[in-house]
Image 1 (tube, rainbow, N blue to C red):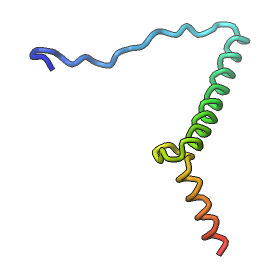
Image 2 (cartoon, rainbow, N blue to C red):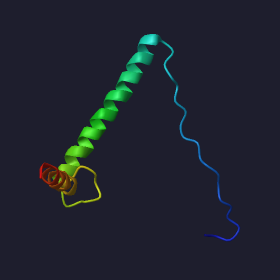
Image 3 (cartoon, rainbow, N blue to C red):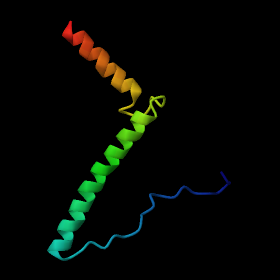
Length: 75
């Protein structure tokens, strides 16, 4: 860090102009909800394929733990 450099505060992002029509508002909300679901599905499928990456939730490690827990509960 340079001498005399001052830390800056939180930076604001770009402004978003929200739609004013009711139909557009509804469409915007639906898009937001569905994109979140698609993202979680995509992340889950990637985690399953990359089972060796144990940091990702839903990977091979989690699947094996669930199987082990089911086997223990049946006994």
